[in-house]
Length: 511
Image (cartoon, rainbow, N blue to C red; front, side, top):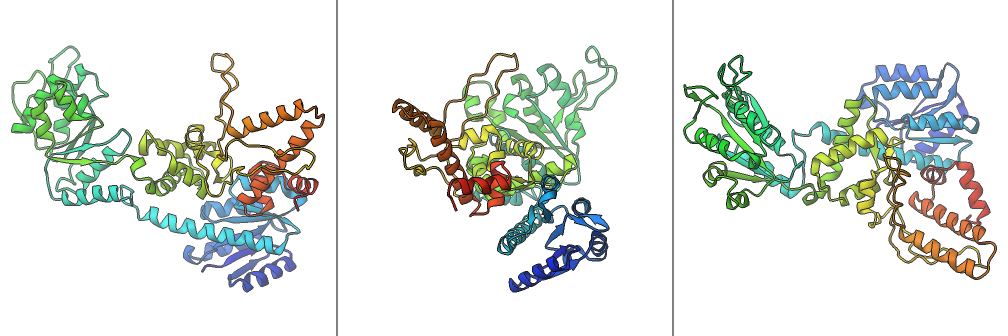
C-alpha cells in the first residue's frame, strides 16, 4: 500500500499521527512544509505517491490551501484531509468545497482522526479501482448480461458486411452500437456516416441521402454528393429509420437490392459500395401492419436484428456509467471530477430513466455543475430523481420508522408511514410570475400537522418547543445513524456547524 503523507510544521502532531497509523499498519511519510511535498511529488512516480494527504492549513513557507490546489492539479483523485484550528474553520470549509475530502479540527480526537483517515483510504482505493475500469473501458460500457449479449453479437458480426437493424428505446445507445459494428468490421478503415432520418425535412432528405446534380432544383448551384457517396467503402448509419417517408423507402429498397442509386436530377446510376446499419425505437412490424412502412424494405433491413436493452433492464451498469459520465463531464468543464456516495448510487440505480443512458449522462452533467460539494449525496440528486424514487429508503438513510419521544410531558409524534418520502422541490412562482402550486405534503409532514393539531386542541401552550425539540432530536439521531456517529460529517450533511450540533446534542440530552 502507498504511504499516507502528513504535512505539519508541528513535530508533536506528526509524531502522534505517525505512531497511531503505524499501529494500524498504515505506512507514513512526513513533511514540515508544502515545498517539501511539492518537490517529493515531482520526484516520485505516481504509482509510488501518496495514498492520501493529511495537511495542516497554516505552516511557515506556505498554505495548506495552496498546497491543496497544486496537489489537485497533479493528482485530482487524491483524497486530501485538511487539519485546521477553529479560527481557520471558514477557510477549511472553503477548502472542502474546493476539493478536500474532509477537514479535521484541532485539537482532534485521535480515534476520530484515525477513523477519518481510514475512510479516506477506502475512498482512495475505491477511486483507484473505478479509474482503472474507466481507463480500460471500451467504446461501450456494460457488465449486465443483456449488454454482454450485445457485445457477443458485435464480436460475431466483426467479420461480416451484413445489414443490421438495431432496435431499442431512445437514448439507449444505438449509434454507439452502430459505431462499434463499423469499427470492428472489415470496413473499419472507411468512413462512418450517420444521418437521423427523422430530423431532416422530407423535401431535403432525398438530397441528403442521394445527393443532387447542378440545377436539379432551385438553389442547387453545384453538384452535391449525398450521404451514400460520402460513406463509400464504409458504413452508413440510418437512425430512426421507422420515420422515413414512404416514397423514399422505395428508393432505399432499390439501393439495398441492386447497389445503385441516382442523384436527384441525375440520369447516370451511381454504384454504392456501402454497408447499411439502420436503427429505430419503433415497432417496425406494427408500422408495416399500419401501412406506413414497406414490408419488403423491413425484410431487407431485418437481416440481423440487435435489440439494445433499456437502462432499467441493466441497473447493475448504472454505477459504472455514472462514474464514467462524471469523469467525462468534469473533463469537458475543466473541473475536478466529483465523487458519489453509495446511497446516491443506489437511488440512481432505482430510477427508471425513461431517457435511458442519454438521460443518465445529462444527470451527471447536471450534478457536476449543481452539486455543492465534491461528494454527491442523496440530497444533491435532481428533483425528478428524488420525487420518482423517494419512496425507496436506502439502507444508509434510516427512516423515521419509530416515533421519537424525548419530552415525557407530550404524546409521541405519530408518523403515518415508515417510508421516507421527500417533498418535491417546486419554485415559489412560475416563470410568468403566477404563484406555483405547492408540493403535496410528504408522510412525515402530514404526521407533524396531525400531532400539532392534537396538541393545540388539547390546550397546550408549549407546542412550538415540544415539536421543535422532537423534530431536532429525530433529525440529529437520523444524521448520526447515517454517518455511524461521526458528528462532523453529520453536521456537514445537515448543513449546520460542528459547534451547533455539539450544542444541540447537549441541550437535547442525546449524549
